[in-house]
Length: 511
Image (tube, rainbow, N blue to C red; front, side, top):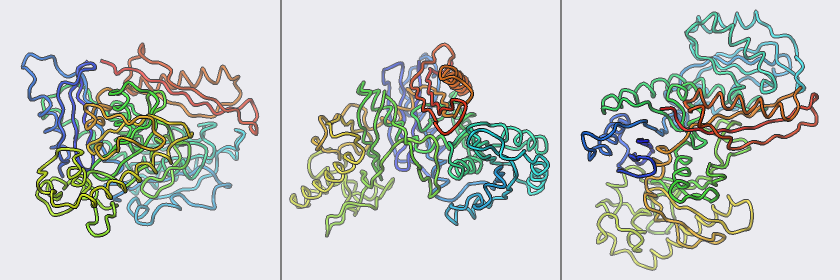
């Protein structure tokens, strides 16, 4: 299968063309202000040497930071309506109460608190106030809002209230985009509501981004279906991704981790992805990124949903080194490294300059850093090594030595020997591991839900069927789907043999 993988990062845009497991061509260049123009250029460059009679591309996989950046920058977000079905129990804290003020002002929510929801054991708290939902929908329509987030108390146990509310809202606002919290989050009401409203605020940008990528592919002469990468190391059809943009948060590092697994053949290892501005440390479990099982903040908003367990730290190729104190970072020249770093004729000392002066890599003009004192260079390298060792140690779950795979454009900054690490692996194409991870990604389906009134076997079977259906909807070939991971935890305080079941399946894309 012939695929193009593209990863649009804050510093560089990477692209790769693969045929099966064979890498045909690669390209890395600074990310442009016009991202779509950069995507067209990336495709044209990796396809430049292809003969005219070569077989066409089967699929294009794109990883983007658009959605994370929109939250961090407080821009390009649309106004949303929040419907919380939790009265009278959930009245003390209004929606978005813990959001940063400037982000809440940008989204400018229209909030409604409605009677309904369920108890922790699945019993109705009070009947759903359908008239209140209808009145809320009319006010949302009159305000011109087209994106709604619906959150009901304990909806991961039963989706009844959210489903009914969504149906009522759609009957009054036919073109509305509805995000139901049970499709994204877990038990915690505020964190689940937060990710629901983030998703609702990003859906307009998601559709515009997908449309723009589609036009860019047409401009590049590509007619193949395209997918967006997700934060679990898989991809989904672009239209599905547009409806759930929050699943693209942190997809860049997970692409790199999947690329690292592809390049080394290892399924259990730690991965350090060194970019131009930051590095991310993560763990591969069965070939996929380890998932965080705690609250993760996105742009200052507390969320609890599927996110990779990553530890970012301020070390990258463009990290600025203080010439007087030798302090490493945290500031970086980022995508301007090719004009600011000493080896490229600039006037800012960066981590890349230190690596070139130490003979770790050949980039730019080495003569431009020959004036650096070698004792200063070695001292700075020791500081960098200490940063790496400390962050690897923080991510380890046991005292045993582990393998570490170094990837990313700044992988040369990772030392050959690290305390607590049995081997540091540097592999060919490590610099474009993120694009490779996108290109060879599979499609996943996942369920993380509480089941009650079913035996353990019935709950597992029901969850697996739901996961398979979601994978097929996301673009997986039905006959290629395999069970990747499953776990269930009995919940003693709930009746009906209740248990939390998490099932994940993966499959190849449909041709």
